[in-house]
Image (cartoon, rainbow, N blue to C red):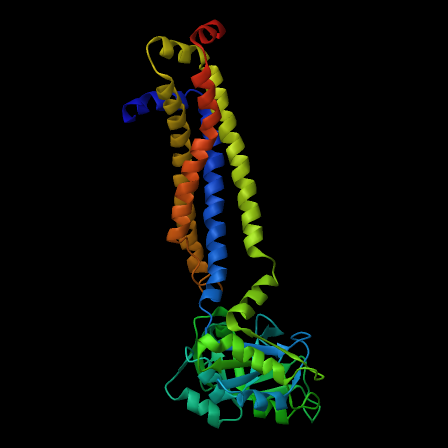
Length: 389
């Protein structure tokens, strides 16, 4: 079949403008496919990286509804719970030269328990974790946030809360930055954590309340069972709870910006459907224009199978060439975007599974778009072909 490639290439170049437009439609389709898949998989990476031995508990009504601090003590006593750390949203604001009200995620928690729940968090310099536990005004800051605000270990910073007020009717707490941490998760690395006791003792209202609880269990296989035990403690109370695995928790947050899988799939299908119509129409027109030539080929002894093969080969070459160029451009763009998005969307890349799927789609679309035109050519009678010519 390879010896017929020069003939197929000549047929492709017969209408150069049509070739360019069809090639461009295939290129754009696979360019978008590669980038959309990279975006989807990078967002989903947080789900796969979630700790299998971690649970997240919140008020069953919603995150905006607090829970009594007494719940935290009961949760720690549940069999199978290794350690638990509460989280309370602080509503942090600071003044910067670029932004007079720079806001960022900040939470009040129990230092020792928090670092035990998240052993993947690496705090520097050495001993910063211990220093945080000893300093009631201590603050650890994610490296992304520290870079954004130009903070360093040893700084003393005032941070205002846009939610809470202190008993002296002010809204600003003073903090000592004792450590900078890295976790590999953009949200965590863009946040800051303070001591719960320092936060709680100064509150004018909302004292002895928490927002959520992060739980680490002894046996990941028992996570679901332990979650049910925890929720059973607070059934029929004024503040019932809902406990999920960390993986389900992350899925819940991703779902807040929409069903990404459905969005990506819908856009990809629309693009591929348009590309398929353009390619199939181009192949059909090409075969109709060559009716006389096909008749001549048949009189020279070209069999129906060879005629079908030539048309399908033409369709495959067009689809594969456009698809490979488009996917190659997507790969180059993803590498550039990965550098720009390394802080907010780490892992943005076109993986091997995407490349394999793209190759299968190229072959499938090439065969589908060339199938009907090839059958038209195969069924064409020599007499009819020569008469039309």
